[in-house]
Image (cartoon, rainbow, N blue to C red; front, side):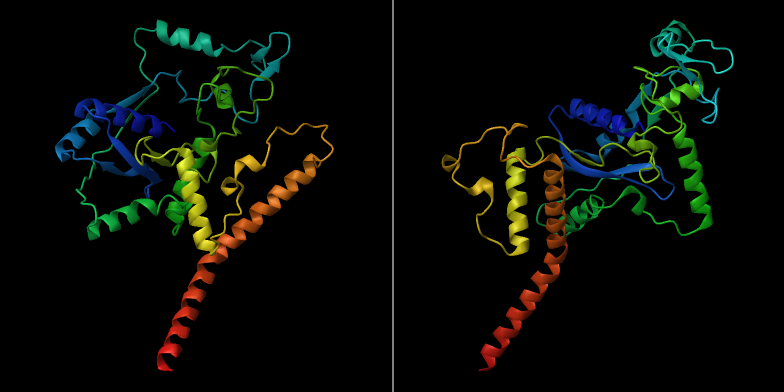
Length: 320
């Protein structure tokens, strides 16, 4: 859950140690034992010793109340008390301490320790890559192959032992608080920050609690802002160009390619007579997305067929 913050701290420490704005791009994936690790490409030259030194010195402390021994169970959690506007013990009716009160108790305790201290493992591998070399393409492919994979698909379960390990991790993940406002804090006798009556401990909707994410619910693709030197508009234009090339459509029928002086744009209002109902607009948008996805899925096959046909025609012409 706290691995993304550890990575942010690493890049901050590396930039301070090097004295320049280090740019990076990479992805996060789980190992076979389901512990997270990351693959990154860094622009510039940094010694391996410095990378290992910064990784060993980087850590992230989580100053939260203790959450190792549950006081309640998901079957019998604390109940909402409308009179006090908070949660209370289901048997005695005693109000639970609020999030602010729990933090005050933690701060007043001279022997308090962080709930978690996150560090990197000992394995830090760094390799130099020269642009245009055969190794560059191989390493780029090694990093980008994780960008399109789901967390749960990185390492398929093949044994019963692996399945049992995954189930144990997920069961513990379901009752572990992920943020100050997570409903799982009720299981440990503490009201979450900004508590409301709809909280269901053990069923937090955050992505980190899902079985498919295995705790890696944040960003899996991590790219620094100045890595490519392009704006979001530039990336969208590149994406449109790639799609048109893949589909074999080089026309300029998209709205962004049309002369903007030909149209006058304004926000649609609910009372406009030419505005379709919301349900119709949603269904049309869903239909368009499905059609585009089908076209993209079939585009590589169609492109290969066109290339094969062109080669056959060229061969016949040569023979004639």
